[in-house]
Image 1 (tube, rainbow, N blue to C red):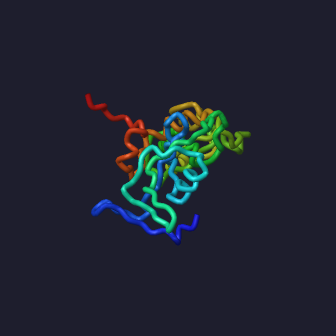
Image 2: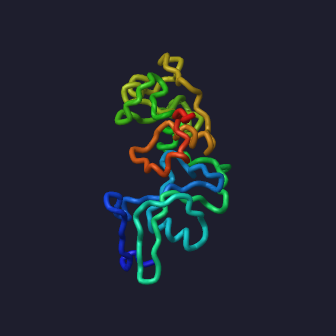
Image 3: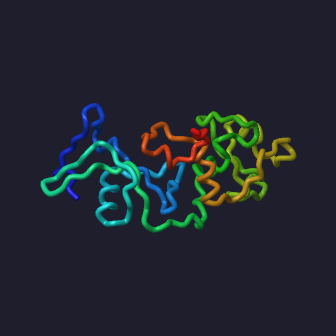
Amino acid sequence: MNSAAMSVSGSVGAAQTPEASPALVLNADFRPLSYFPLSLWCWQDALKAVFLDRVDVVAEYETTVRSPSFEMRLPSVVSLKQYVSHARAPAFTRFNVFLRDSFACQYCGSTARELLTFDHVIPRSKGGRTTWQNIVAACSPCNIKKGGRMPKEAKMFPARKPTRPTMYELNERGRAFPPHYLHESWQDFLYWDSELEP
């Protein structure tokens, strides 16, 4: 699809550029593929998926794209036609460790993200491995304070025993961290903890 050959229009006051029109991507069960980071596609990927019949359009923006042969409103929410299983194990990354631990130091509870690092509960110098079961999020001051000591020596124990999370657990944890931008058409699909209107 040649995006350069397309023109854009929208109703007065509601027009926005396609670049500012990402589509929320839902699984076939109408839940976001991921909450944190939120599963979003750029407008080109969303249109391509529509044309390839891989998704259903659930909601649209007022913004319209046109080419000489067709016209279409940009999708704001799409759902996959085939369900993507979350049975696979999540990647062992710094980000996923922080997400598992709710972006909080497991020793003091600090949520200062700029200070967040990770700590080997059993230090590497004492045979500790870099695994889900031995790594926790820790703020720099706590990491320095604990140093290369065992938890009992340092009298510092993680708030939660570190375990390998499932994709479902990471998605559920991610729901507590809503993105800075939420289009109104996404609200019904993001199950943030808000009261339902009677």
